[in-house]
Image (cartoon, rainbow, N blue to C red; front, side):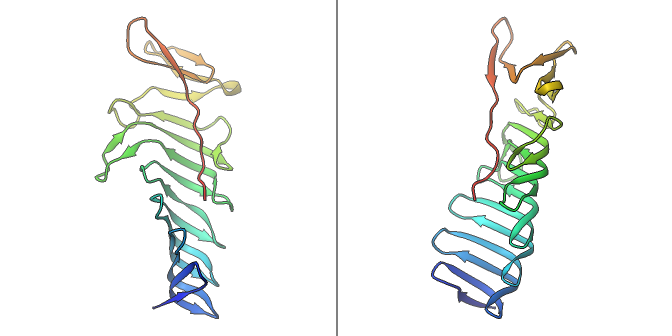
Length: 193
């Protein structure tokens, strides 16, 4: 195993064949502080590998083909994550799960959020057939109210009395009594690479 400077920015540790990375190796971008460790074929990512953005703490561990991820798990520095399929622009595409919970190093939940399971297109949820699970107040998986999309993008939420209530993209939150507060849930999906 030898270190090579491929150009001013890229350092490669591994085997070169005809001047291109081949087999197991690590490719580092010196100026941007990123690195890919894994399998190469004819100079591109091919097979199992891990791409790390050291400046942000984000990482993508998965299966690569022709230099792009096919499937894998993208974990943000705050431990929120996406696990599923990707398109050739490294954006979430196809079946996947985005988990907004944040976790401690031991795997216990640090802050409760929510989880979306379903189709993604160009980095965002696609269609209305996905499953959203809210995790609140330390109750863990399934601890919050279940929420599903109904016809024409409406959301159906089961109330405390078991009846279905329709909401137009807003959710009632807050404590008991007569005080009720509504919050709009709008999140940005995707990753910047």
